[in-house]
Image: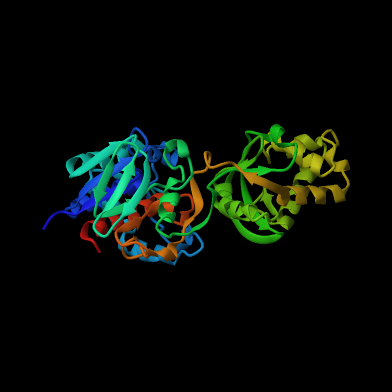
Length: 409
């Protein structure tokens, strides 16, 4: 029986694993990558260290319009399978607070072992070629690139979404999928910085502090996260902002009102913080207001807080009316920021939105509309929180798609 010919559009995380999976099942594989090298986006993951999965692997770590597909996918290729896959390729892994990295702390390690396996298997790699269209007749798929036409028995779309197009994800996969009847949940940036309203950001830019960030849409609570907040010259950044950003982006897309409440003293309740200030006041009441707050907050934030509480920087803190101290508590614990937008796709780590998961067979990743067409990774309407979840989704969907594309089921 002749080996099946599998064509993979996209040579990123899911495409590379799909190629390995398909080739191991006996298929002849062709990867078409529009950039001049494979896996460019892998090199940027985990700040260049490649956080490739997470010990805590739960459906709650994934978002989308319908995430029921996630559990079925993870049941077939979850945390353990990912660890085994890379260890078999020769990677020694290490764990840091549940996050899994190569022991080298280099994303290049992951890309290099994947490419070594690609070279070992019957996989042809075509670089710097863009796919313009895909045609499917009764017998074969014909994939038209800028240089040639490649024919195969199955096609795996592993093009990624629209985040960081300079690394290869330019949204072209959505167009290719739509030709075969697929539909798209609106695509917006996710794991991305948020732009705030106000003229005070330049004075606090560069400050980092632990904080709880709570998102409201039309004044209704949506999500929150706690961690290191980074203040920029246009708004807010950092892991807790990234974790809630997809909800902000979706709401902004629908022209809804979006705001964030920042708690700059997340380890204390309002009353605990007020009592803490009183104890501090009893000891340091002779100090000027800005000196009184020194040692509690990043120096760049002190002026902002005092101005918002209508307290003069040079006021002796024990002479400040109690009402203004209560206002200071509110400012520090419930600092409101109106969100005007997100940074664009170039700054986003992933996208929210994509091809609806209800249009995919979760057991095989095959299209429900077109036999022999498979969709993987960020192309689908699933995005994970920070912590290795988006790469886990890429590895898992790629592996499953490759395996079944090679078998023809």
